[in-house]
Length: 226
Length: 120
Image 1 (cartoon, rainbow over the protein chains, first blue to last red):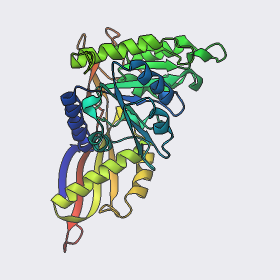
Image 2 (cartoon, rainbow over the protein chains, first blue to last red; image 1 turned 45 degrees about the horizontal axis):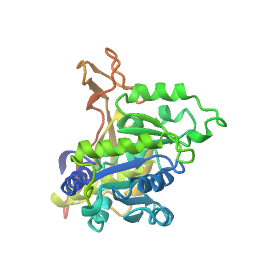
Image 3 (spheres, chains in turn blue, red; image 1 turned 90 degrees about the horizontal axis):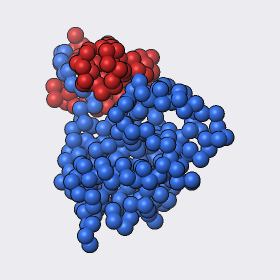
Image 4 (cartoon, chains in turn green, purple; image 1 turned 180 degrees about the vertical axis):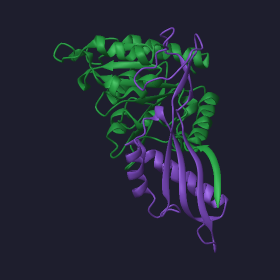
């Protein structure tokens, strides 16, 4: 017997992602999905970012890795609450994992939910988690050819961060090439050059987060007056 | 590597459709892959061979059809065929586009047998 289906295989994931987005909207929490290769500086960026946002704005984190709770251990002192997801063999997070984790997170207290996806430049771009904004990172150590090689995450990103800029003088990195490759894919997303070591561009990133929070939720922080 | 994730998602859906239609053995699966998803057919087959073990599609074959990519510029409404690494509109050079086709992975059909029924 033949059954005509004609349905997206990502439909099941996308439906849960939409529910997640509704949930974040209800709580007025802005959810960001951080996507990049392993070692590009997601966790370090979050450590500094969450600290810089406090005390006016609180953050909760969901972090995905194949194994260990190392990232959660690092982020725990900074964030209001952190949940680590160990994905085992899966190279990205699914919307249902976010739905389950979000249930146990104090979203009512959180201005931001940072989702640190599994380090991978391909699959995380395929699976909607229900985030409001996608953040793509590329550390300059990875090479200036990566935007063209792994274009999808840069095309769908709401902001692109070039990280580890403090190393720019010791690495052969053709900035013009990267900017030109990004321009062919995504002229809407701001491109920020940052370093958490030298603090280059860091204030600009924090300002972007706060502006986005205000424009998407209407208020800068949930408990700004208290 | 994303082929494995996509095949797993497909097999979940195959399993659901099989249950709904009381199929206990799937013989054929027809999947349409969007060009812009950068799916490698050989990798899809390899992933399928491994992931189908122990599922209702254990003995099924997988047929793949690719759908060409098509985008429409949000500024000047020009329709064009984007390249994976270049989404610039050929008319106005903008990159704010709506993808019309070629960005999805769609389960088109499955073929299977119901309990007590021979393969057709």
